[in-house]
Image 1 (cartoon, rainbow, N blue to C red):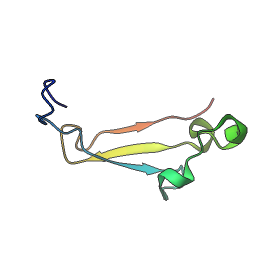
Image 2: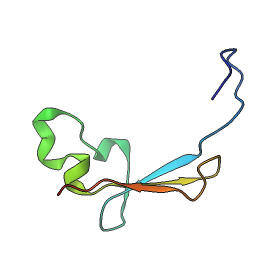
Image 3: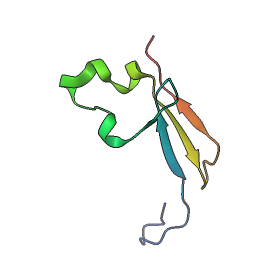
Image 4: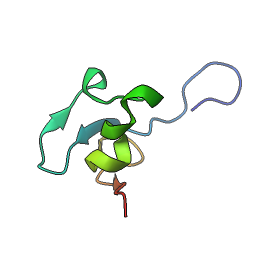
Length: 65
């Protein structure tokens, strides 16, 4: 984050993405294209955990119903 001057005043943290089995995912493993929607973030059950920064220890999960 910055105050508009380009100088960082805060950091949210380092995100780690995991699938529902707990395996770490990398950007190349997470499809975002519509053609690959059967493997979307919601259907795979991705969890993101933050380490360090302002969101240290926070995790978010997205699962399809």
